[in-house]
Amino acid sequence: MVRRNSFSHNKIVITFLYLLYAFSSTNCYGFDGESIQENRRNFANAINLMEMGDFDSSEKILKELATKTSALRVRLELARVLFLNKKYSESRILFNSILEEELPLPVRQNIASFLKKIESLTGESRISFGFISDTNPRFSSSAREINLIFGKYVYNPEFRKRSDYGIGVTSRFPYSVTVDGKIRTDVSIVGRKFINGENDQVIISGGITFNLKNDPEINLVVNHESFSLGGDSIYNFPSISLLNNLKLFDSLFSIDTRMILGRVSYTHSPDSGGNLTIGSGVVSYNGLDKFLPSFGISYERFYSEREYLSFYGIGANAGFLYKISDNLISGLRGNSSQRFYQEFDPFFGISRMDQKSSLIGSIELRGDFLKALQPAIEIGFERNRSNIEIFSYRRFISGLFFNYRF
Image (tube, rainbow, N blue to C red; front, side, top):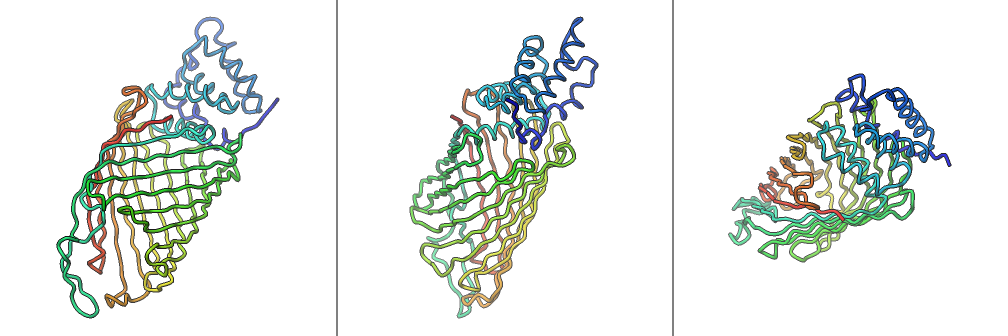
């Protein structure tokens, strides 16, 4: 039966990118001998059948060709048609074996897109665990004196910021409700267990995703997030989101946009909650072999029941991934944002303004070095500067993590 799957048009046709990099020679298919012309015709026929939706016939031809050559182009197209033919386990194995070879970074990223889609369809879970260090886990100000509207307040030294160490765990459990992946559930848990139990942090997020369209990809997400600190519930955040992924100029550029509408409720101060709107967009450039840059902007608007807590904010971020070697990937991302509060704070007598900035670098080792475990190192810095000193803080964070999928 002939079937069409628009995911093949929405994601990069991997071989098109790779043609400019590695297949400029006459015999780019890896075939030798007198049968080269026939094999080329069979390869072109397999691609045409794939685009027409006859995945069974295309798969049969490509599997036969794969016995005659180890050419990367043939294996990439075979992995793709296996995906389109819903043979996700075979497709994942082949894609992962290809990732062990030397590839341009954009090709790696787009193979990752297929693997991510397979993950959402098959429910592959992942856990990341490791050791963490945080110089200021409670985002405390180092200021000793705070100017209040009725006078000065002096901090008790016990409440000053303190460094702490511990164990961090991040887990994600996706599940496809429908066979075609149109409806998916996802639960994630982020936990940080410190030596000082008062600094323990847990973020639990769970939701359901509805795939509305595949080309461009549009998803509707209904989600709920909760946060606790030191075992004490801090806030709950139910929300609804609209996500869009768009490819331009033969996937040379990728644009991801997100719009979130939700309501924040604080456990110990119900009247401080309110409605939160967040809009963001990220543009990635996929035209370089080893370097993948991206740039994004964001806007947020919070309407609190206490008017002096209402604010609007703008932000910008930039980052990149860089392939140091076949199995070593580095990354760097910086973010800068500002928040402007709308009313005078009754305790401090001024309208609050915050400027927050952060910079996080990472190095990840990929491949079969530690079987299922993929080690990574992260180091970062975060700073918030406020015209109300009690809200100013800075912190350094670092961690050694191991990623495991099952």
